[in-house]
Length: 214
Image (cartoon, rainbow, N blue to C red):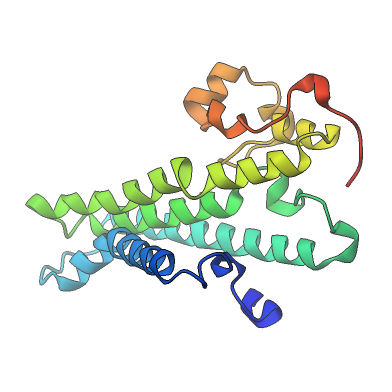
């Protein structure tokens, strides 16, 4: 839907003029897709056919919840950004009230669900397919997902008082009510809710904050 509206994928803007960078990007994407889909690949290649087990039900429930959250979050953000009155604002509607990155929560949750559903088939070294969801989780937590978006948002809105309140009271990953998350101690947020300090390394110092609404 985004491509149909915009006519291009803007993530490629800085790469189209450099064939080497574009090639590296596509190779990385291929490795990403291959690694993350390892549970699906191994299950499809297996000739084992166990009866439905609890892991199947749990896994597909996780997948259903994850894909629903990711799709809803993406649609909510698309509608938000397409509204002229929201220009220059960060998305804080729908699921984005409860998580700063609900789409990534859904993405990670659905792939862990697929892994759980694959476990009745796995034997021996096939259990290494757990590297798929681990790879995705680490990538979004520490490399190309949350850190980049947090840095971009902090640089853009870091001097806005209401954004700082939003960031302080909104979970970075697991959807939680702001009233609950905002009152949790920082050590608890870091250890259990993935509020890593480097997610705020680009946030201006409190003393430089000034107020605006957009």
